[in-house]
Length: 234
Image 1 (tube, rainbow, N blue to C red):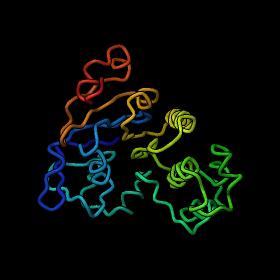
Image 2 (tube, helix red, strand yellow):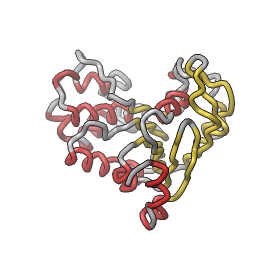
Image 3 (cartoon, rainbow, N blue to C red):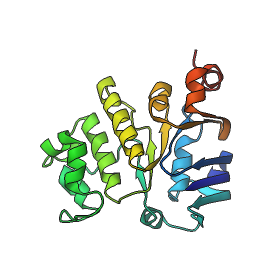
């Protein structure tokens, strides 16, 4: 579904991604691992065609279509959704308003407000609370729910477990696994190796803007040594 080939991205003259190549297949959860500053968020922003960074080489194909000349909203219309790092909610909008801003509450097809509330019962309880009144875990649930409202075929998740309590991390892992089983493709940017291993089918490691390691999750579970060395974990 998604094919990134020899991608080069820049912030001004700073060359951040140096020929990144990866794929995400239908119904597959792919984890992108790496330490801070390795280019993971830059890759996500490049795929979504945000104003920064600038893509100056390589290709981005979604189901055979080149994304390079599209705007972010045109990418979203291709049913590619983003769960951004830091959640990026509107402080003054309620939970329900965050969900209905993308689709009317009366919608009956695909993902609906009630279907999101079934997946996240806590959000149903907090439906009238504003974004700035939610806990970190609740904000993350809402960020995922908001992304689902465009009926995506691919979700890009940027550090979804960042800053969450362990119990919330486990809950989110369960949600990601459930979404993968529905046929949704997911590209998951993560620093938590064990969280990534619990949900991913395949993993890539990004180091100084380059993919330096690719493996199936099963292979890594059997032998974590090579991945640990790339991540600097002992």
